[in-house]
Image 1 (tube, helix red, strand yellow):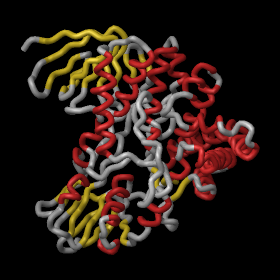
Image 2 (cartoon, helix red, strand yellow):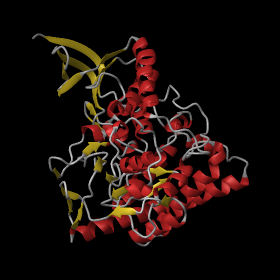
Image 3 (tube, helix red, strand yellow):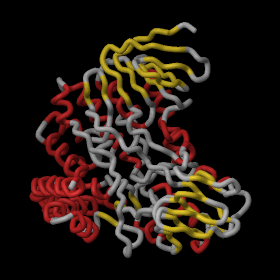
Image 4 (cartoon, helix red, strand yellow):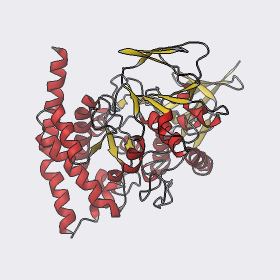
Length: 470
């Protein structure tokens, strides 16, 4: 079969949230031509395979592309997110990205979109439907927007053996059940496991019928402290000031997390069990209280073998009741990733440059690509903030994010761009503090502890790594 030759300034591999946010800035701030390639039939990346009741776990204002609002700017009333800014559903997010592609990107005439294609590397891809092969002559950069690939339950293969006859399903299939089990066993303690438990409880399931396998408990962020609207100013910035003060004063990791919980920055489901995991997930206090109604929590490590009459764990085993349904929520959100710079010659690998905000990060990286010269300077402004995993990574991630924020603040043009980028949110809130002594006092708590916080986080991180190596 003949090879089709194409040409563009940028080849963006992946039309998930990161790829879309990156391409949006290229289209808005330059006259660049772009080719976008993706394995799914529609843009949106992992949202194409997400479970049907999934929602964003941070406010919709933080999500999508810079040029098009996702949220409707309203608070939710009723439910477990009552009184907080709305969380878009998975269906809304998928429809949003499809609309952006069809009505924003393609009409520019500068972007070509190739869905249902496998990228082969070196600017080559092949159609999964027709088999046509393509080779792109890239004049500027290849953008690998698949690096932060998010795993979802429907495409996840469990890393433990499962005997024939075990009733086991991915989270996606939970709403399809027709034969009611006597017991639901939720496998996984992360955000997906939280969503599964909350969905069952909201659907009227008695919490006594739920067993929750949590190999590790997680530190969670209080969603009220992530609200990007003015009425939540003191919630947001008191939490940030508490983070700065805790980071500056802590003399160990344990002390750091204790202080962060005491100031309200972190919350946890079970106050009697110390978390070991942190993925940046947020919960409302109402969700937290609802989750606490589940009392049957198993902490025996990861499952090694799932049989019809027994579950074997790293640290023990349990018998299996008759008519039990196992729900797989064990997929890690992101694999362990190699250390790669964001800018490396003719390849850009978008990653987070601000904690927990992949789409803002992608937009800022695209702006830096267009506005600055040289990989060294670009990487200085875009130091990688790795996705959080264990709680011990928190110090490194937070110190890097703070350092990036400081570097941006020293660049007047970049600061101005961030102020007016809708995916940022918080810079506009800071502006409202001018002339308000109470708000200014909160911000001063942040500023006065910023340098000490970064230095101490770096120290704690180095001490931990040295202890691990010895």
